[in-house]
Image (cartoon, rainbow, N blue to C red; front, side):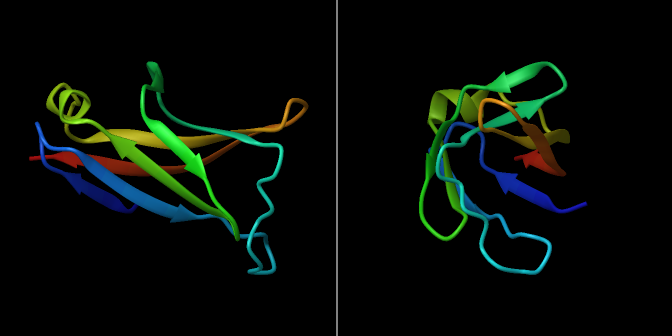
Length: 93
């Protein structure tokens, strides 16, 4: 499981690239992407770009209350299908 390290109380952003089984970039047109943990959706700003790239931005206020060692998933939904991708671990220092 991959680990993403964030600094508490600091604005943070990261990108993720989603690929199809054959390695080509996933077409995310028409999808909603959220960052979720077992408690629900994390209130992050998620921007869907081209070529399967998603950028997640968290404010200093959001990172200051995040729990370390959280297991997080991406939830992709296009209205009829929901997919969970992950997990990865968030370490807050």
